[in-house]
Length: 555
Image (cartoon, rainbow, N blue to C red; front, side, top):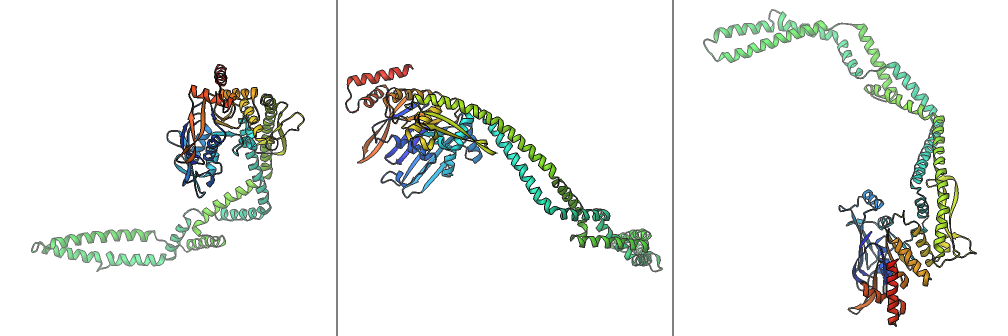
């Protein structure tokens, strides 16, 4: 619910901070005192249009801030979380600044936001009923949601929306597959040939590298054998072989080391060199033994290399990438074969459509039952609100193919007199009538309404006497489940409130300003007497005011 509303330099309000209680609160005061300005300020911070005309004369900017308690308002909490604008303490602070030049800035929980975001969030927090643009009752989506909420059909409506989305997805897949099928035959034939050729070639992973290495050995086998033999000759087999000469040098130095110990280090190096040469000789011998002159194998390898290389050129890829190309071609061919199963896609689409139709039929039946009950109860409520003979209807206009919201458009209609033909609320109901229709609907829907704060501006237009008292009782009843605020000129309505504020116009520094004052019991009795008696307040008027307050308190 709304906790506080802070207003600075807004129209004729210089500065005020209002703390809003729960229950039913009325704002009263003389005409022109600024009662509706407070509602206008709330509307602006909830995303309504704001321009330079809202800035108090002589001020640089107007500012409105509204703090809300989001306890029991899960939709608002979810919206904030999705937008990344939630507050740590779980509350919510909306702020709007309108500069004298006309520029407007918006903030949610201290972070910059758009006016559209204020408006979206505000729809979960406050419903303003009256002669304002912020009238959710006129929005087709809200009319549909009201009927679904009244009938307990929210889950059914969500199921229809989900089923509609699945059906449209299957339909899109089928249409796209049919379009692809017209050009996929050539692709399928090409891929099948590619898979067949590459499968027959059967290039293994890393085969290209191993073929290159083997071909190098086979092509140069004679040179490798000759070089290995020559190396063995030089190192170990010839009369003047390296090993023999190393041995001779080592033997001579071993005789001389007794005369000069400095030769010991050289001897160690020569001994290591002889060991290294011996190991090299052994390795060369083993290597030469493995070498084989095999011209037939060389021809086979060269043919394999040419086949792989030809395939790589044909498919415009590296020879080493041929195995991966085969797997990719197989996957694409399988996908084409899957997509080409148009019968399966058509069957899936038909099944999805059937599920959507079934769920839509359940929703339609529920809406018809709920619409009849809602129309009857709202019509009954309207008879007590100076709209005797008015008829309220909920029209369900069929949509042949359906939509995400079901197989019907929902429109709230009203006839304001017995001979009238029911028409759309926006076209038939006047401002005052629309306020009373809203009041009647909100009373009926009080048990399921999700918006915690309801504001009624000029809800008493065109009524008086006993009807005004009925309006007051209805608002008081709404105040048991919602936070309700109402601007009123009628004492009968004001007497039913849980608390009352008086709005007065005063002169501060030579300029008019609007001041809001919560009333205690004596002050409230005086204000009710003023509303009853005008300029001349008699003792009888005061007694009448006191009696009205006592009677309202006992009901």
